[in-house]
Image (cartoon, rainbow, N blue to C red; front, side, top):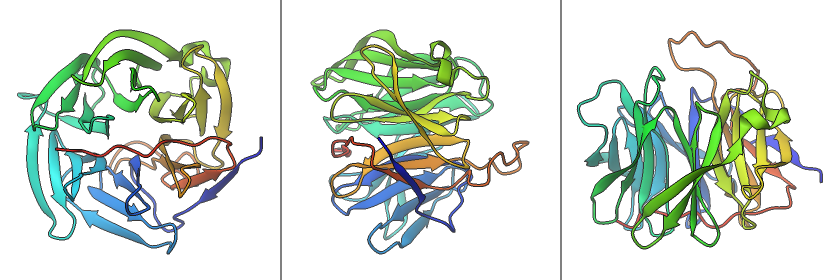
Amino acid sequence: MSYKVEIILKDTVSTIGEAPHWDDVTQTLLYVDMYNGEVHRYDPVTGEEDVLGLNGVLGFVVPRSKGGLVVGLGQAFAAVDWETKTVTKLAETDPGTQNHRLNDGKCDPRGRVWGGTMEDDFKLNEGSLYCLDTDGSVSRKQDKVTISNGLAWSPDNKTMYYIDTSPRQVYAYDFDIESGGISNRRVVGNFNDLPELSSKDVLGPDGMTIDTEGNLWVACFGGGCVAKIDPNTGKLLQKVDIPNATRITSVCWGGKNLDELYVTSLRMKPNSKLTVIDTLDGAVFRVTGLGARGRPADVYRG
C-alpha cells in the first residue's frame, strides 16, 4: 500500500518535538517543543499555529476535560490555562532527585494521566512511571526505567503498552481499567530481534500509538521511520520511511477520520554535542494513505 509523507510546518523546527496529541474537540494538533518550553497548537484547516511559552522543560501535553491542559513540566504534572498562561502544579514525581524530568505522557481510557521520568544524562534505571489519578493523587507504577517513552492501551482496554527506549523494547502489562493497576510485564516488541530495526543507528523505540485493530505504530529514533508492529507476534508489519528525517520521536492519529498519522522529530538539544543528522530533523510530518486509523485520544478527567 502506498502512503504519502508531507511536512505540515515548514517554518517550525523543534529542538525536541514530542508527545503529539490530536484534540478531537478543536480538531487541532497539540505537541511540545521540549527544551524550548513551548506548547504548540496547529490547525490543519487554516494552517496556522499558536505557541504558548512556559518556563521549564516540557515532556508532554494533554487536554483537560474541565478546560485547559495538563503538561509534564520538569518533574511535575501541572495544569495550564492557555489564555492566562497560569501554571498550577498538581503533583511532583521523583522526590529528592536532581536532573530528573518527565518524558512523554498520555491519558488512559479512564482519564488518568500517565507519565514517566528519566535522568537528563540517561543514567540507567533512574526513572519511574507514574500515574496521576482523577482525584489528584499520584502513584509510582514502575521503577528502574531509563528513558521513559511511548504509552498505548489496547482496543479492549485490557492491555497497556509501554516503552523504555534504552533496552530497545516495547512492553505489555495486564491493565485493570477500574483501578489503574498494571501487572505481568512482558516484551511484545524487541528491536534487537527485528532485522530491519536492529541496526546500531536505530537507537530504539520512542513514542507510539495504536490503531483500531490493535497494531502498534512506533517512532524509531535514529531510524528515520515509523514501525507498525503486531504486539501478538512481535513481528514488523510495515516500515513507514520519513524522508530526510532521522530522529523520529513520536506519533499520533489525527484528522477528521483519525486516519492521518502525525509524526514529530528532534533536531538537537540546545548547547549539546548533537549535530544535525538530516535536513528535516525537527519538523512535523503528516502521513496519509496508510489504510489504518486510531481512536479518539483520551483526556484528563481530574
